[in-house]
Amino acid sequence: MGFFKSIKDNYKKSEAAVVVQNLLEEASRMEMFPGNASKTANLLVGGAWDELGDLLDGRRGVRPHKIAIAAISIARAIELADATKAFSTSHAFAFCLSKILAEVGQNGVLYTLNQLDMKLLNKAGETFSQFATATEMSPIGQEVSGFMGRNTVTWEDWYQLYKAEAVAANPTLQHENGLSILDFLEDEPLRRAHRDGLDPKQLGREHADVYSTPEFLMKLMGNNPSGSK
Image 1 (spheres, rainbow, N blue to C red):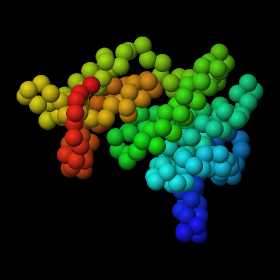
Image 2 (image 1 turned 30 degrees about the horizontal axis):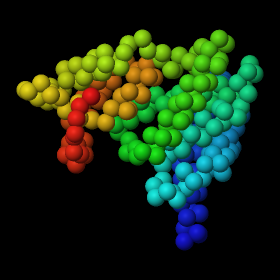
Image 3 (image 1 turned 30 degrees about the vertical axis):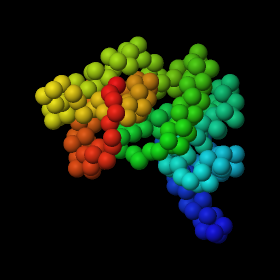
Image 4 (image 1 turned 90 degrees about the vertical axis):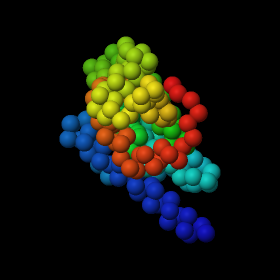
């Protein structure tokens, strides 16, 4: 049993490391990261695994998604790095983490994320927020904090703009009785998109087609809505 668990662990580490490596390579192309992307990615994921193995290795009955493992691995690296240095790797890590948070915030509905994934992503989001606040006075800190999309629009107004745009693009989302299928969906991915400052109209248009796919409708039919936002 231990042998097969080790194989599974290494596979999951490798999956997450590829996500981190791709992001670090993007940061490198933007001259934000001068190191070895592959080596650093493996070190980041390995370090997180050593410290948070009880959350990552399946002993709680479920294994997190590779994107959640990548996020918490980068978040841990940000916490360990010295953000006060002018060219600290923490800034490159923050850039990478912002890309993950934005992706999940915008396309979270397309991922199969469980409660553990959300716990890890929320923790990573908190780390990113703290980093952005701590470095917001520096030029690069201002650039990174821009990914936070500090929103002056309330969640309620943001959601109404999102829903109106989605319904306009896909009228089948709105029923004659005034109820919308959107009101019965898990709203945490959208709330994160609001916190990350994503454009509600653009996101509504992008999600409109997804909400009408057979796969999504079958998933929805398997739910038991108990209320609305």
